[in-house]
Amino acid sequence: MASAILGAGAMECVARRPRAALAVAGLGLLLGMRALRRSLAGRFRQVPGWPLVGVLPQVDGGKRLAQCMEKWASELGQEGAYEFSLMGTRYVVVCDWELGKQVFGQRPLNVTRNEAFEHVMPPLVGDGAFSAEGEKWKRHRKITSPAFNSTAVRGYFPAVRETVGLLVELLEAGAADGAPPTNFSRLLPLLSMEVVVKVVFGQESGALRHGQSVVTDLLFEVFAAIQERYLAPVPYWLLPGASLVGLGAGSGAAPRLKEEIRRLLAGIPEGDTSCLVTRLAEAEGDKLSRQEVEGNLSQFLLAASETTSSALAFAFHHLSLQPELQQQVAAEVAEKAPGGVQSQDQLASLKLVKAVWMETLRLRSPGPMLALSTAVPIEIAGRTVAAGVNIFVLTRYIQNHTPEAKVLGEDLGEFRPSRWLSANERFVEFATLDTIAFGHGVRKCPGQRLAEDEGVLVIAEVLRRFQLEKGADSLAEISAFAQSPAEDVVLKLSRRTAEAGARGRA
Ligand code: HEM
Image (cartoon, rainbow, N blue to C red; front, side, top):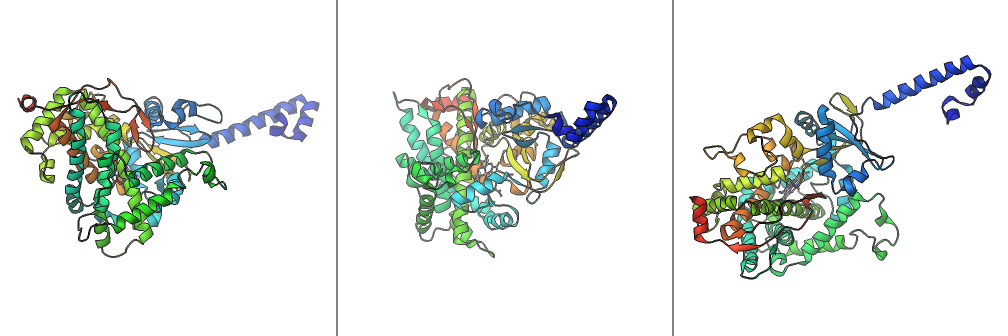
């Protein structure tokens, strides 16, 4: 080892003259220290880890990633950023809002989505606004944005309402005497897929009615493949014959999903002016190619489903633990939308239900962190972070730990939706962090309005009809594409009586 540092000539000198030996050793030490200081200059406080694998044992293969990063932020994040190493890769974690805003402000060119997305998604589903970067992203986003504006989303409301109606019909069976508890974790992904299929293509896939459908099965399969490829240490699916021995990681499902998307595109009802595809077709100016349309539609389906269903599963878990809150919600719906929610305006009047949705996203965000990369060297907290470094921005941690969060109260560990409402039923001022679960800046989620319509409507319609019996006392999370419940949310339902609704109003 010594010969590697000092060189063979110096070794000879050391043997003959001890003083010279000391001088050479000192020089070597000095040079070594300088080199070390230079390499550490841009470093933040580091999470202790193991050689080679880094923090892998702590994060349990990634499942506890968000939880661990939030804990490390409390311990090591005084500077607003810290870092860790995972399987030899460096990750810088930003846990302060000022620094977070600076990082978001560098998008879309200097800071990109974690580069793995660009490599993993397009080969399976094609190009789209979620995975594209740079000028290509600008074009995809510009052309697809009108399909998510408030007029367009208002037009999708009947489709959302109809699909939520199907869910409620299914839940009726679960509320019958002697019926087993309802597995919300099984039903909600089907609901959110069905909502987005109906909104995008103006057709029902059959997922909710029949418990499955070709397009939803393929989407679940491709979704699993994206996660598998994203986490894989090597692209084993590229090996010759990988698919034949079951190592295709979605290679079989991806072309079938494309075919299914084409079949749905061909089946759009004549004269349908409200579905998302029609909105895209009506866009003025530059158009997407057919392949780009298909890529974007697949990416919308993927981006919309697990996020919304995960948030709703958490919402029902928390509601099940607070019967009084359930009654208050039911009473609000009974007062503002007596025959059920018929319009977006009625939906907007349900302040407490919206507060339940916001509280769910605050405490149980499906996207508690954003995985980004530097495309060029950038400054973070006075240090230069080189190009090609992975950055996590801990959005949920920031939302709950920034000093401004005091407007929401001191009990931020509790699920208490009323914190969002001030005395005159206005929402507490906490912009822009109130919607940080959807990201921030130019790449903020375009589906926010649609997700909110679905989330608020589902909570309102389910609690209008049913009471949820108490579920598990606590519900752990796992990190995947979306932060999700670690256990299925399984709850016993009973039909709500008129008296129960009235009690909530009293
Ligand atoms: C509760 C539900 C949802 C949550 C929490 C959520 C959250 C997010 C987040 C955190 C991002 C990344 C933002 C960023 O990089 O700054 C994102 C991006 C995106 N979301 Fe959502 N989302 C939800 C529902 C939806 C829905 C319903 C759709 C559409 C049908 C959708 C479509 C997209 C798309 C296309 C992007 C990529 C935007 C871009 O990179 O330009 N999302 N979403």
